[in-house]
Every structure is written in structure tokens, then in C-alpha cells.
Length: 543
Image (tube, rainbow, N blue to C red; front, side, top):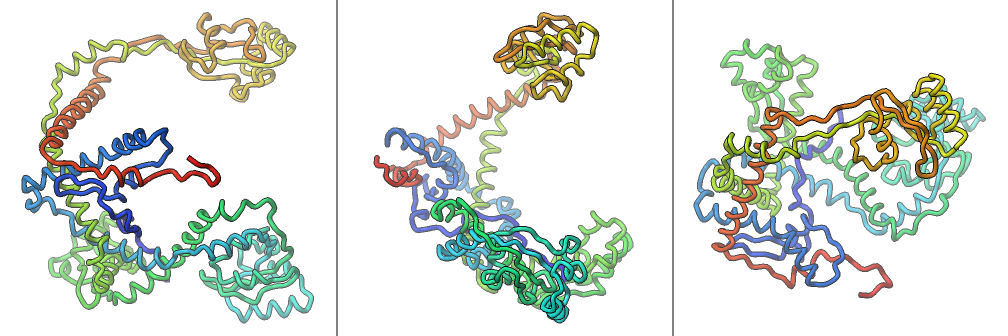
């Protein structure tokens, strides 16, 4: 069976485990609230010269969250929440939240790594194993290979003869690998105690088949950083490894729990062109989950976007399994009553809040922004400098720290040798491989200032005499000249309109938010705000 991984539709910040501190209310905006975890999701901790400066910076970071809550509070006060259109698309959000909550419980929580795990990984990471590998389909063949090895047959010869691993041609040599690579692998225990010159027994590979490892040499890393410096990254690495493994295992188990049934006769109808399907055929069920029909031929017509003439028969089962995954996982989540989980409620509340914000923003801000053609034209006429493009010159250079080389380069150029060839031969600048080209430059370019200054004194096709530059000497040539010009109004019209619209949007929004601040009470717990999101001082330092 083809392995599938858990479908992470989106990871909600709210489903991550939060401590009591992170659930505390930091700001009240009317009946709306901003919690500590909401603030920490947008704030980047840093050091400040004083508490006053820190408080001011944190309040500034809070402003966007407060503005969002003001919009939601006003929308609720106008009764927008009762509008059925606000909840359009809500079921999709609920399904996603259920699946993500299921993922958190089945994969993330079970894949947590302890400090002891991190310490074991750290010790294993010190050990370097120079390994060879033989991969075979059965353990029976594996034991026969070990008998030949015990009888004196070299491991590399056996690898060439029997292994289906990509390293077979090189005698199975897999190189030198940290033992930690196998930390979550069935081979870890045997490799931990394997002696040089010995092999493991056949070890079942999670992807199928069996592996035999031969240890040529065991050594240790030098200058490994202290455990304390690596602990956090090691924990993440272990959890990533575990979650990848659990994702496969849990998905297979959960899909079995959902009791999925496929109607092969119904699925076969999807191999017909859509126009050939009758009303009766469209109503034929294709997938059942826990005994309930979740899909029919008619509900799976989106497949024709990819296969206009029908699904190839050999791909029908894979397509059906893909379609069944989401409703199957939702079904399992509901059986486990995960719809009562706080994360699902937060997802629903967050979706409705975003819909309310969008609705009132559209009415009170977006709808009030008008930019006339006359305003666009006036802006263009009043800001000529903004649309003026100064002259640019395409330059090539020769730069060298050797006076002798620059003299030879000048001599060859006077003799008519191409500038590109001379630059490649004598220039020590990285542009030498491009024949000295440094592209188009403006007169105020500072990165190649001495070359640009000289280049803007020459005509197209001319090159300069040698001149001094920082720590060396240079020659510049003008390859091309792009004259100065003013951009046409027609080419800039839409950009100007967007800019004016953006400026007006900021003004209208600021005025509306100010109006709401006067109308809706905003309370910030300044004491709590000072306590959270602080940079920890390094050990040994005091404030």
C-alpha cells in the first residue's frame, strides 16, 4: 500500500499547548479580549534602555491587535454576526480545526522529546560510524549472506552480489555517519553496541525489506559544542523525526478506525466522460465512512478538471483514497468528541471575527475610498522628479593592484585588443570572468565611484586612461548609454492610482479607528504587559 502522511491542512497557533500565563487576558476592548498568547505571536522580544521605553514599544506592537478587536466589537454591536453570510465557509474551518486537533493529539503530543532523550541523542551524535550496508528483500536471504560473511567472504563482495541498495556498486559503502542519524530507527540499538569488523543481524526496514550493516570504524567527533547550547535544537530534531514517523503510522490506523467503504462500481463510472453520465449515475454512492455515504459520483466531479475524459482506471483507487481522507479524519475526530476541544472553538471564533472585521472594513473604509482620474493626473504633473529616469551607462572595468599589469593592459588596448580579453587576463576584480562588465550604472553610483566618475566623462565605445583607485589602478570602458527620460503617464497611471488609494485608505482607517477608540473602552494590563516577552539576561550578568 502506498504510504500517505497526515494531511496537515493548516496549523493553528491556538492548538499549540499554552500555559496558564499565555491564557491570561492582556487587553479588554469592549467585550473582546486580547490574550497573552495573541500578543506573543506578533511581538519580538528585545532589550530596552528603560521600562518606559519597553512599555511604549510593547504598546505599539499591541496597536494592530487592538485595532482588529475594535473592528470586531463594532461589527458585533451592529448585529453583523446574525447575518448568515458571515458563517459561509465555516464548516470548512471546523473540519480543518478538527483534523489539526487530531494531529496534535496523535502526532505532536506523542512525539514530544524529553531532556533525557536529548541527552541520549547528544551522546550518540558524538559517535561516528563508517558503515557499509546490504539491503535485501527477506531475512532468510540475510542469514544466508551472514553465513557467507562468517565463512570469509568480504562484505563488499556480498554487497555487490546481493544488495539492492544504491550503494551496492561501491561495495555497500555508506560513508561515515553519526550514530544519532539512526536515533529513531530500529537499527539504533544494534549499531550502538556494534564492534568494528562485525555486522548486525538482518534488521527490518520500515520502508520494506531488511538491512545488514557492517562497521568498518568507530570514531568520535571533535570539538562538539556543549550540550546546553544544543539542547533546544536537538529536542526539535528528535520531535521532527518522531512526528514524521507517527504521521504515517497514525494516519493508517485512523483511516482503519473510520471504516471506509469504496463502491467500485460507482468509482468505475468516473472513468466515463462527464457528459456521458446520467442523472441516475451521478447519484450512485462512491464512498461510505462509518456506514454513512459521504460521496457520490456527482460530488466527485471536480476530478474532471484534471481528467476531462475521465479518470484512468488504474488511478481510481488512489483518487478515492485521497477524497476519503478528510471526511474519514473528521469522523474519527467527532467520535472522540474533539469538537469540544478549546482549539476548535478558537478556530471558529477566529474565523467569525475575521469575517466581521472584513465586513465592517469594507463598509467603513474600503467603500469610502475614491480616486478620480483628475487626481491621478495632478499627482503625475506635480511630481516630475518621481518619474524622471536619469542617464545610465553600461560599463566594463579592469581593476588590478599591480602597476605593471595596468600598464600592460593599457598597451594592449591601444594595440586594438578587445577590452573583454584584456579584462579577463589582467583584472583581479570578480567581473573579470564577464569580460569586466559591471552592468548599467547611474552617475551617483557609489559602489564603483572612481570608475563611474571616469565613465561619465567618455563617449560610448571609448575607454579611459589608467587611473588610481583604492589599493590599485583601473581602466573603464563605456559599452552603452541609456539616455535620461521621463516615464509616460499611461505607463504610471495605475501605479499612481494604487498609491493614492493606499494613502487615502490609511487616512480613512485612522479616522475610523480613532472614532472607535472614543466609543469603545480599551483597558491594557500594563503590569502584565511589562512582565511578558522579556529578553532573558545571560547567566553571570546582572541588570
